[in-house]
Image (tube, rainbow over all chains, first blue to last red):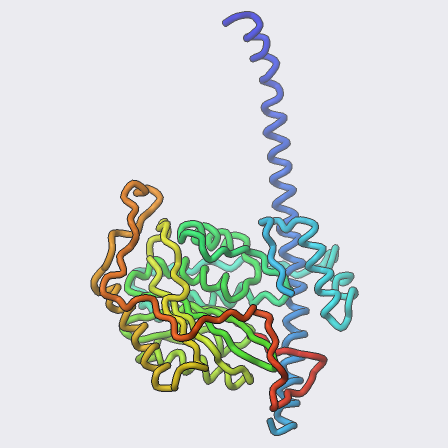
Length: 68
Length: 307
């Protein structure tokens, strides 16, 4: 191997673990965000499901009261 | 409005903010809903449901119940934002990849997502036929669309799916004819004051999760305004016969897959009836409003019974 190529190869090596570490951190952060979003989505869905049910029940009562 | 998350997961910031803005607009408590939930430290931990796994001896009807329980456990998505983008024209293999993602991410879903998931979770049930059933209904001046996955096991029809209304999703495979199944849905719609206007029936979906075929969503399109009751029933049975014929003859080459692209050729229609359309076609946009009905509905701040 030529000296310059060997030098490039030597310089490239320390970056690889750092790049991999960074990638792993990003993946972990993304996973955490997904988990957080999932928790908030289900909390929101519970609230909106209750709202829908209340509105549906009220509507049904009105329909029955008006004798359709 | 109907929002779709097109950026994958996690949800990107613009889509996330749009979701919360929408909720604040439609919920009586407005922004307080978001304030209570966003950033809260004590939100309940929602376990990720386990995809049902079956012993070889488990009967198919029992498997369908388990699949439906799984779908139900994900919950119907009432947030106003659909989290998985479904392009109906995608090859089956792409839709199955999406279904797999749905099981990994485990978020609330709506009816079309449930159909894709239903197909994915029943691919290994080779004696079960699956076909999409789409409904268009009318309520209080608006049109509504819904879809379920029709199933046929041993000549008995049923359905898998998810809906806001319990009666418009799962049906055990006990109906002797396709007509009986569809009439059951029609009656369920009537009980929540929806009038069934149109039914679209797809053809049977391949069991090969790597197939590059597209799902045929509307092999038969039945416009109830243009059919007598008897004709409606006949057309439904004609579709059922078409499905039986296509399966029985095993028409066409094996489903083209990613590994066999060189052999791809169009699946033959065989002896099945040509694509049937029983109306001049529906050119109405999905949100079109009709003039107010003579039978006025009580106004609950404009509440619409969606399905």
